[in-house]
Image 1 (tube, helix red, strand yellow):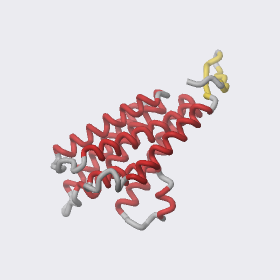
Image 2 (cartoon, rainbow, N blue to C red):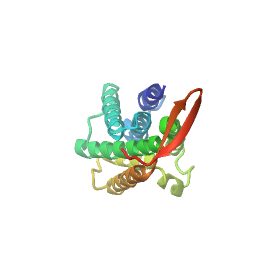
Image 3 (cartoon, rainbow, N blue to C red):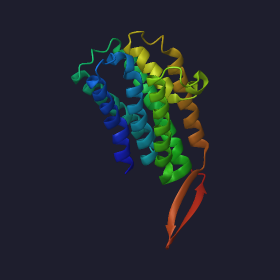
Image 4 (spheres, helix red, strand yellow):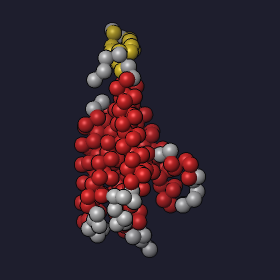
Length: 210
């Protein structure tokens, strides 16, 4: 189930948004709205799979694979070539690391239920990203600043519009800093485990780190 949800959030939802964009009567240029779509794909893949597998590296890998798949799909739909491939790749890596770190923390704190938390977080941040993209100014700036998904969207959008790595510096620093702090907290947090004991389930906390 978590892998199916991750596929829906990371590939199906962004691809449907791309298709709807192409079929609209007056389509917005892809490069102006690609940031939120790609950020959603990376977030769904990185956070949910990392929480489901309880492995940070798996989350990073799946997020990067989702990013590659979405870019290739967008190219097939007519997206122009990347203006700054290096800056775009760096934004993808920073976002993947940040989202996978959060998934790892959810797995650490909630064991096999961590992916549920990740799913609701992805849904909530995706709704805010969509609202911010569709209705600029509807959400206060201080709220958007608190969302790592918004930082990822800003970094990716800046790279795609040709501004380069320097212009996306603040968002990249925020993503990397958040990832580092999240991984530290996940490492120090006692892991929550659940094991069956007869017909009942006994839950306990273990301080062993992985």
